[in-house]
View 1: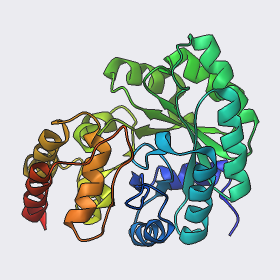
View 2: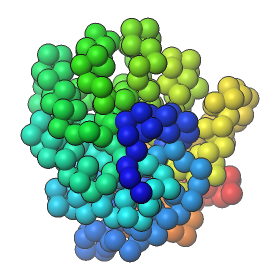
View 3: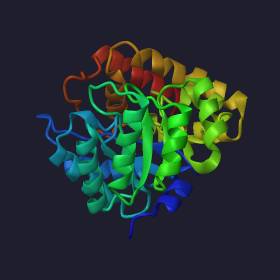
Length: 304
């Protein structure tokens, strides 16, 4: 099946929940293609609007360029057009261009442009960075605004006007004033995606600012709960949202926040807890302790 064009991708992505599949590793921390394929098949069997291969929850930051290309190709092959596959473009401008071109060659449907690595840049430089990556591919591009690449409303407006294939803005900051400014200036020219850690926590208030979807990490191991939460948000059912926050999301955050880096580790541990073998994380991340894993298992049983 041919990849979606940018307009088709934007329409599809904004229509439902998104997620980042974990990347499976063997006990010696090599890519485990078999388990990754099994996970992708399971994830894409649900009503999800897009999957980000090799993203943050997929430990994209720990993958070599060759591994990243393999993971994107496996995802495209396994999912076979059932769900859009969005690949990451990371690092400096020329690395990100290389990743974007490789993703297009692999048959991905779109690009998530991550912040440049370990460098500070002003808005003019960020505009050139994003524009250069957009110009390197015909795929739809979603820019991730966070860390050292936080875009202002004026910059987003310039980028949207300059790059026809820039389809989305993913917010990793949660600044209400800034999101209000961006939506007021750019409007529906772009789609807006929530990208804060455990995005469920912020989903309801950000909906009022034009952020119509978000990427759910917990979809990896409790997909039915994640989809139910998303439906409650879209329906603006405050009672249901806050019940789910209290029953699961906030206690889950309490476990996640015990150790730096648990944001990814807890997802793989969650897969273990539901019998789907998430496997280990690569350093510098660390796996959950047995005590923390036991607390997570107890919490999951509460909503099972």
